[in-house]
Image (cartoon, rainbow, N blue to C red; front, side, top):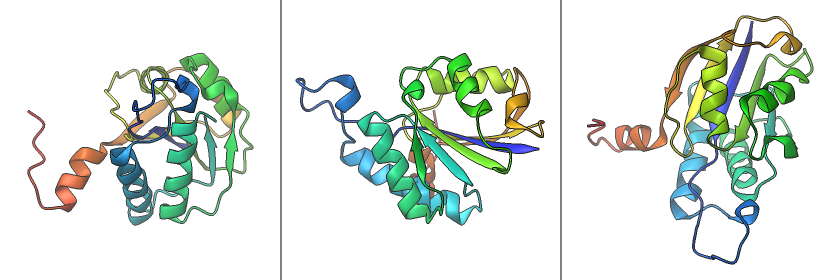
Length: 173
């Protein structure tokens, strides 16, 4: 049994129209949500053994802030294949993970993250920025990852969790 944490990058800035999509940084909201999610995964005991991220600026910043604020001891590996990846490309990246890793976090972009979650679980679930899907995989080796091999344990949305932490209304009407 393996555990996969699928994290969509936090909210990015559109302030500089001259920047390429790849070079867009996090905005103020993203710089708040990413550390919050790091602290939350630590609090819930969901720290990954390894992290692989898109090297795009907003994903790299998200992965770094989550790692720092979650006190994740793993280094971040950057893989260009995650940027604009299809579910099959993400499956390939994950399948190359060393088998001594029990829990892996992948940090990337939509629509790839939602598509990968659908591929693994058979369920389409919206993943807003900085959302984290925790998937339990019915495999012993990462190379065995296949369609519908996972079960969604939890989908954590930062806006709802931040409202809950602040004692606010978390209805999603």
